Length: 435
Image (cartoon, rainbow, N blue to C red; front, side):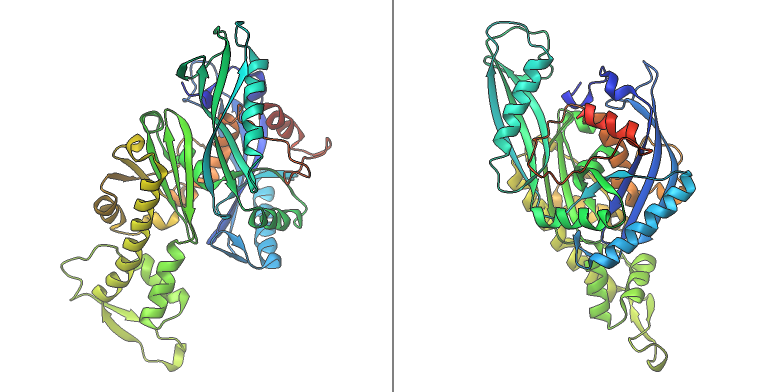
């Protein structure tokens, strides 16, 4: 049982309504869900609540590029429309929400801290002391702390202790995985949300959320990497022994494949996206030279449609896909967790649905690859059950597993709190006590 998966806390066993927001480069998706405590004995590993979606709204993303706000007004408009749609469907008004973050040059570091026990049994106050000491180490960073997670405890000289409560020793240590990001992109996403008269309850790294949604128990435990391929960014999360131990992202995604097609075939972005979805593949087929695809040139009515072999499209797509996967292979190698993940890699995110991608990924990454869909959430419409919705489902799972996350108190913290009169007050109170 990982440290993140403890289920004994009363604070984590309350009912409540939760609103989450996935702000991506391709789409903005808001989900309102009711969380009901699971009966004992019916818990998924790490899950304390059953999640029932009661409202969902999604919009084409505007004002975003590679996870960064580039037009505040347009980003605010897309967020407002998605949240309004989810609120109307759920029949309630959201005050605050949990939102994902994929930009800001995510960086993972491990910090260690130790506190004296004096030979007595470890209790909750000792856990809080050592987590606070680890969090203070993280504050030395010049960047914004997104996550500060315990990945293993040390009791005297014994490493790898998962739950030290009740054990006896002279010193209690902890290894903390601290994920940081540049402050400006995070603040601008928060600003776009604040302008929609909402506050940010918590920001969660996209790779962490996607991994929580798409990985199964054995993968979390034995070690696996989850690669979330979005429109503007591709992010990696590495889990080992049930813990999130490394996160990273690169500013390349499915939109770059579309742009390459539009440039290479001299057509519009809309036409290139349609061609990619309907005829695109990262793998060449035997009939590609014979199959012809009709291209509508830029200029619409005045241009004469052209016909090209599908192999021309495939070559353009394959070049970008292979380059992206080679970058990911290098990032996994540099992470130091290559051995921890073994042969297990899960692809998720909207851009992972490209035909032939898993086969190319197996060849370049040299590992077993499967496509992962979000797990364990009821009430999602059929259209929202695919890989493109892993992040938003992971945001619904996150509060259930993060009840031991240590969050350093920062002066003028960017994570605002809701007032006591809001409809989501009970959930924000529950989240506050849980973290």
